[in-house]
Image 1 (tube, rainbow over the protein chains, first blue to last red):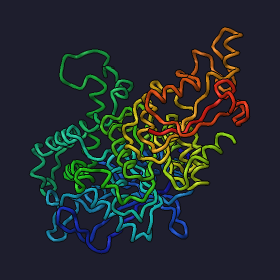
Image 2: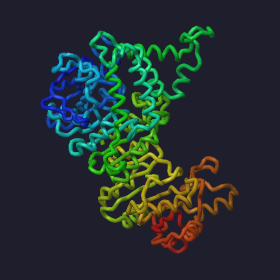
Image 3: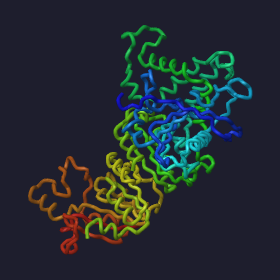
Image 4: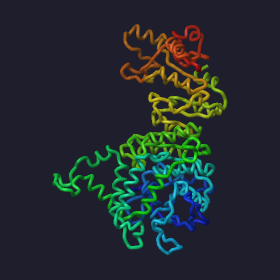
Length: 369
Length: 195
């Protein structure tokens, strides 16, 4: 791809000081891996922070040498794309608790010499945001031009605007929700049960014994994947197509959709850490900025100073447009600077990853106005 | 005066404005630049929404026909509904809603009682197609057209006060004829209303 970033490098930093977590524990010597695209200007006023979602990481854009697949948001980040790297300096870290190089359950606990495993503390979205603010300090970025994310990433952008109102000018909150519904939590719980009931989970100590609960992780990913796609997208992509053209009257993967899900689950289970997956789903379940404000979202938004753009997608049933409207209406009630777009897109929750024209135009106008 | 000048006269400096059907945001942009208003637009067309965002305006994608219950009572100083009421499915409900949300409201309507519209229907025997109503009957967004008389009767029926009203000819200017016989010579009517 000609307009994709090339020669991407992964940076690693050990943050100064300790992070006090909401659960009451502290973490010190946090390692964060991150990527940057574009150039920071002289007054550090063109920096955009990208927050990744459940299974994402720091590789948001561009293509590594000798690899074909670009980063997870390459459709939107790059030269002259929605998040234009000719204008902006874009930073994307792998959050703590992750499994791609930042401190997480699979990292070595310096006190024990073994991996944290199930002892890694439960993190919250607010913890992530505080950790990202420590990264901002290290990078010399006092104020972000924008903080943007989709899904769980959008929740971080929203939390940024509440926790650090003076350090963020714009927040792009895409395909997100103000908190999870019972249905959302239910899907997460099925995923967790799949993992913890895998015999190779070994109470979360699988790394110590050289194992990995791949079957459980695969099932967790398969159920998650279904919630990312729309019925329409699945129908168009697979329909009822059979792999071998005829029924075989057995329980092997016969329909295309079955083999697709199995394949996706296998790939994921090879590259993702099960404890991180458990942690990420818990972070989602716990997110509820209104909780400290008697459940009143507009009160949670009282300190916000940023301009906000909320975007939802017509076929997203995981975090439907109605969920985004809850955020929008609370922002209207709190008299904040908010704009809202509902994009027609067939891709379900995954729509935020695709460069739909109206979505790209809306987002780039918001960042550049 | 033209319609925009009247709106500028009716809107207070530093006030909070909600524009229902704000289009490309032209009115809101002028009001925020010249009168330092805080503004929010409601629009359904995404190209228009992008243009509003480019202008730095706050704009919400929302279909007015699906309700305005997300806005609190008297939560805006002025609600503007310019050339919008005739495209709505339930104009009466919308009128009650705008007067609930705004301390004052500015509503602009195309007058179906305008002489050229009347003449057009009388002579041709077909649904009028004019400069301000350019679409054929089967292809028009204007599904609830009314005359100045009709609109004022609806206001009475709804218990809505007409605080001020102004009438403009087809080029958007007030003149002696529009003042004398508005329902005949007014192409556009603008009302300041409240409830």
